[in-house]
Length: 204
Image 1 (spheres, rainbow, N blue to C red):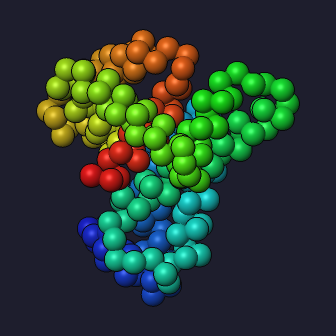
Image 2: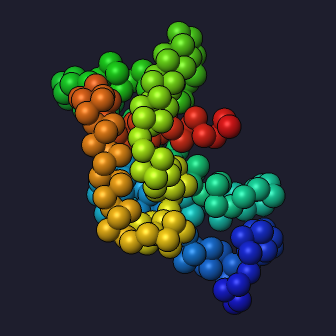
C-alpha cells in the first residue's frame, strides 16, 4: 500500500471495502487521535479504546461516509465519543452521590447534546467568555494552544510547523492551560473548555 496516498484516496478505497486503505488510515491517525483523546480522559487504555471504537464505526459506516475531510471527521468523532464518555461518568457519579460541579457539567452536556432552551443562551455566554479568555493569550501562545487542542497536532508537529523547539511548545502550552485554570478556577474543567472551543471553531 502506497503511504503517499491522500486521505481522499484512502476514503475511496475504504468505501470499496479495501481493508489495506483502512489499515493505512488507522496507522496514519491513531497516535494523533490517541494523544487528543488523552487531553480529555487522562487514561491511556481508555484513550486507546475510544480511538479504536471510532475506527470501528468508520469501517461499519464506510458506505455512507460523504466526501469530506477525513482528518476533521475523525477528530470530530473522537471529540463526540469523549463527550459521551464524560457525560456517562458524570451521570454515574451523580447517582453515587458525588454532586460536585454536577449542575455546571450537566448544563454543558445538554448544550452539546440536547441543545434546548434555555441552554442555548448559556452556551452563547459561556462560549464568548472562553473565547475572550483565549484571546488574552500572547499571540504565539494562542497559536500553539489552537494547533494542539483544536487542530489535534502533537508537540513535535507544532514545533516543526512553527520552527521552534518542542520545549518551547511545551512552555506555551503550560502557560495557556495555567491561564484558563486561573480564570475559571474550579468552575469549569479544562476538558470542557476545550470541548466548547471545538464547537466554536466548528461553526466558523
